[in-house]
Image 1: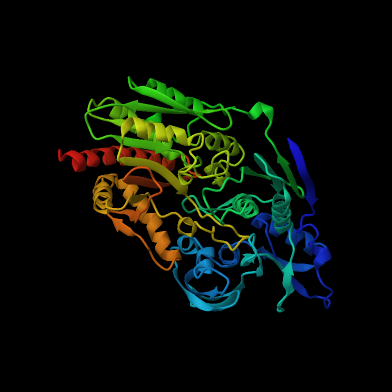
Image 2: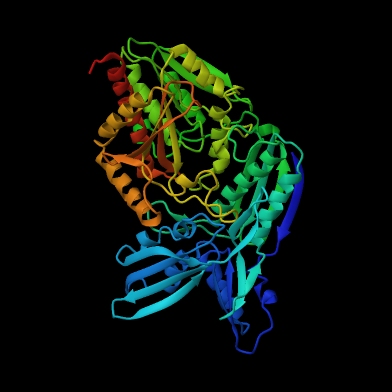
Length: 572
């Protein structure tokens, strides 16, 4: 490996006293930093011991943190919140930034409505004893050029003498990000780029669903997609093109007690080429975490009869497939195209066990398409098991394999082989998405190009079809919602997440039938007339939640196969 940069950054919290302006004796200060609550309280105490009065608030999700830290939750009975708007921000940016406030304070009647332009939430609080309070909660932001030169409104550090406007300050968190993006922008073409950053920020679970305040995870997401954007721009690729091949970009963000540290390197350790992370095997039906590659291989080997096929990956691994011929209409089943979406792997293998025992079943299976990305995810979750790790979403080349149809790469050959062997007209394509909020705080907050998936909305179906196949795709999806609705736990889980979407967005923009959200779209991106895409909120979940999602994936496969036979043959 070749080291491009190693740099240490003074922790802004530790040097805050030096940033305080001269003020009248007894003046108090307010600061907004990218620090967890415990660190901010400790910083206040340390400064108080030096005779300095300062309130240190969170620059990340300031309204949510203000309610958690400064409002008497037990006495609160209601609140009216007018969230700010800004011409350079998404219309729902500040409404989403408050998520999941209404869910954490479910016993209080909280109304959120659009407010004035600016950076202040206007809050009216009502308490059980009849008291009312009016507050303004400041959301520190700065307008700056984004990765592609466009104006972006992003969270930032801020400092002011209490009662004054104050001004933005550079923080170590922002400096790590800016330094890394600058280094990526100037780097030579690479096969793999590792962005190792150690920052002092503890994850703070919120106590609702899988939601957590995680500055480490937010930095991973922002660094990954910002790096992709600048590399795409450097090669002339359109911003956000999933077919672009910037190389494998790996933000590796870990916790630290000391100052922030950033190390950027290119290349791959020889010992990692083709390596696979080891771990214990689990029973498929009760699998409560992602499978190792070794277990995926063993489960495939255990399927009876059939034909095996393989595709070599760019980093020396092998993506494996299974084909079984039968009298029924053929179906292609794949999972882990995006390798941090892991419940589909288990669901596909469980469904294959059932289908392999059915003489009529005719299907091809590739349970882990993006095997290099899957191994990267296995390594990243050793240090941060509950982070989304979108670095593992893409292939070793950095592209999305289904969006470079003119150049079949590596793992995609397994899908094409399964399609050629089966002749399938239906592709059941198992996916996932974040089980908790997905943010990019230093690049406009919402993940650009993925705004629809910023908060979970239940086990979701997408019926993608080529021209002329809309009615078939819709019938397939609608009938499948009926079958999935037999899983009462899934319907209840969906209802809870859909209520959260209604509470923190302007409204639902997709269809919901039998408690299952879905939409139908026409596209020529896929190789079959109809593609059923599942979207399970599985990124970061373990335990019972993982079992729920992988079971739903299995049920979706078996249901789709059965419905497809009805549609193709007319046999019930």
